[in-house]
Length: 246
Image (cartoon, rainbow, N blue to C red):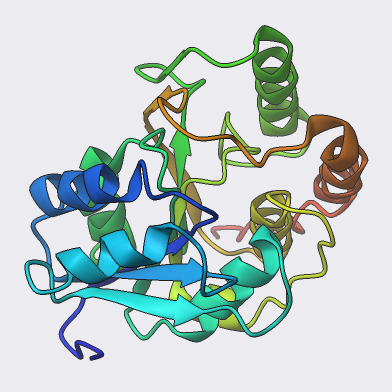
């Protein structure tokens, strides 16, 4: 049942995450004390995540199952999850415990109280770090993030990190054109930046998954990231004219 008082809606796409999802739900419950929902988005009824979630729902009534009816894959699961949100703040996170959910209350505060539209979790700013994961993938993401910070003025050192908080209205007004997977987060952020939306970052710790198999496909998705990388560089927001005092 939808909770009208939820401050944050988590969108969690899953694919056979039965080994991880209970720990992920318990970590969010422990770390995020503000009113929330967790929308578990799945593709098929045989997904081994579902029986685990159903067993936990009496203990965590704010956890809901959302079936992705838009087509298979993480991108459509994210779309389906966004369509099911109602809270002011939306956070897309994975069930693999890689994301630093302890920073969610601060992310939500920056949107609700400080007027930001997107808050990026950053591994590559001062205070952030990455633990584990393929070295080359980390090198590419760090290079992309730092170069976009300086070349495009994007207010994040970690533009490829999909863990970020969005003002829901930004998601609704930004149709996702991406066709691959997690590059959608760079797309939305680059488009929001081009429109002059307020974006900031806070330090975060990312840990490589401890169970299951990652769905990140670097060879397939790298060209798709490049599309939005160059979009960010070529669509910097117009400078506001300075007002002369006289």
